[in-house]
Length: 363
Image (cartoon, rainbow, N blue to C red; front, top):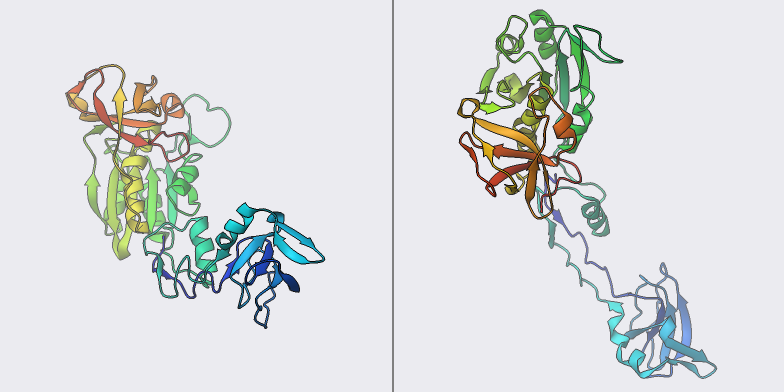
């Protein structure tokens, strides 16, 4: 994100320039050729009436010239250069880019807070900038907790393959961060507390350990670090035990639930808005989806975040395999819908949280 406005340091273009390869001409035809102007060359003499110079696209139009005749719309012989037809003669004045036509020196080109896209970089360079002042991406450390987790191969009985560590880099880079460091930690309070104390990242993300069981140490580690909870669980399923804590020195911790779908729900509803705030970007506009079938309510679960496939017109179909530990439904989804505790009727319109990659159908 731009941290400062981008202002034009020069007129765009700097001078009158040719919009096409052709002839810079002065006065009525025919014209006598007196010079050849490649893009890097400028004629030091004024064209007199009846004279012309061959000119390349982007070259400065010489003084005295009042038009550019495209090379493909011209005829040239011993008598000079002339338009190939009446239409070419009528369009002469459409092929000169006038000085300051796009912007004048001092004009605001792009305001602070704008995402730095490739066209923004190109525009800034064209306007004379060599560097841009930007809001740096948040640095993120990820600590994967769970003594039962294995990181490769097929899990043995009593083990669970880590399904969060491999996908978190893609989630976080989609949210605008640099690729995070990912460290696997033992389920011991001293280990988790030491990791928090040694991290200098803007945001620490933990996976698992956010509940209140004997092997869950994130809350105690936050307390030892001098942090305090801004969000201490949410009445939603999946994702209930998600946490957000502020740490000393303006740092943040997000505790993701250990169950994969619950963690992904927390990524969309907690991590994404946190990073948008840190990066100075605007929240995306609210998007809705229309369910093709009724969904019964479950008041005890609060709101539910369920995987759907949403079409371009907004119609959405709920996907199976949406248990808190399951990823099969999400792997086929374009996003999540927010189902209220009372359930929904056929054709109800619900809030829709698009997944942060192509194919999420946010139109």
